[in-house]
Length: 86
Image (cartoon, rainbow, N blue to C red; front, side, top):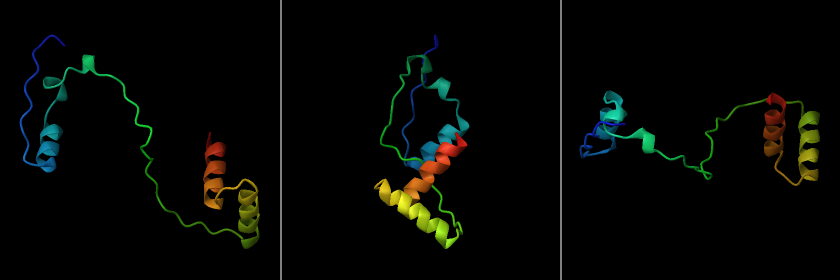
């Protein structure tokens, strides 16, 4: 970016800052060519609760398999689903 970046205004609160960025082109204020990649390893992905009806016998088999792996059965179900969709 060859042009001079505009200074950022001070904001009274987060809502005011959000409105500012919704209506403003960030390249006027930030030189993105100097940006660096960062890793945020402790962020957890958003989750949603679902209700899933399973036959009791199937659920018992899943719980047994999870117990053999020393993990919660819900975590095992998530792992299996993740493997399957990939």
